Length: 112
Ligand SMILES: [Zn+2]
Image 1 (cartoon, rainbow, N blue to C red):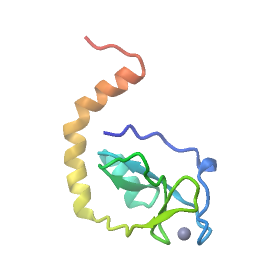
Image 2 (cartoon, rainbow, N blue to C red):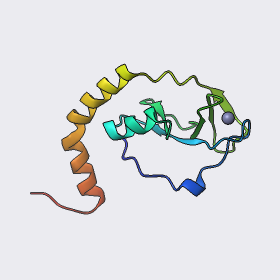
Image 3 (cartoon, rainbow, N blue to C red):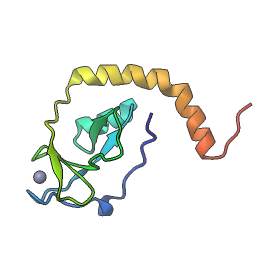
Image 4 (cartoon, helix red, strand yellow):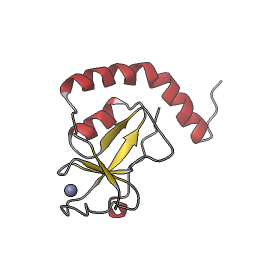
């Protein structure tokens, strides 16, 4: 589960290859709102597997995922399609309660 935090536009660099703005890669299970952003190309879904050394930016034009230093990258075709959105909708539903708990925890709210 990922709590997606809106990135600061200015902090996201441009693609060293084509010069277009890179998008942030979001890892973990995501909700429908994040899935929609991915559909719009506003971010890139990195999947559920997270390692110690994952790329953090993605270029939608070059289909490359860049590591923090912007020198190393991996080719990664964006094979996002509408079927995935259906799945994500289900995930979003099942995570709703868990999400609420996490948000309460992070904001210091307590529920009885
Ligand atoms: Zn590029």
